[in-house]
Length: 193
Image (cartoon, rainbow, N blue to C red):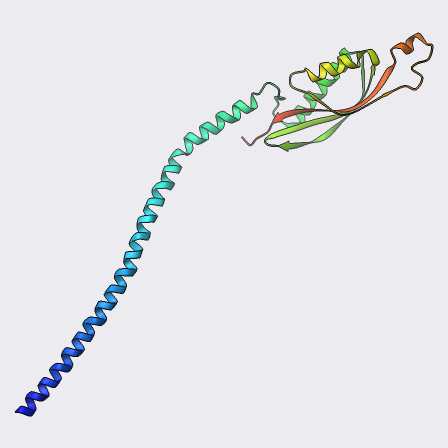
């Protein structure tokens, strides 16, 4: 009987030891799972917060689009800009303006060559290179008329050449014709609508 009791006691001790080991393993696994799920809980909280931020930004979109449309309207309504629906129309408007100014100052437009439009900071630069003839006495008035025009026009790359015999004794030589080659630039609002 003592042998049986010792045998049962040995088995019980082994079972207890195995039970304790199983409990320890389960505790370790449970602790690891709690750490993993605890980290996921923090990630979930962060994700929910970020989702709320995104939803707030999306809710502001109509207000921001309205403000952008208003800013574009203001930029397009600047008085010094050429108001046209396309680059081609802006170029035609610039040609008409310059031809009118040159004619008003007794000049003659000989050629007009359109320079391809470029875009800088939402503005399209409309440019046309001209060859024209104008009396020397009217050159100052012509340049003043160009520079004070609305929409704003800018003289660029100017070459002015006088005839070689303009100082002869001829009375008409007192007001010789000048050959002028210059580029006139104007600006048009072109930001995406």
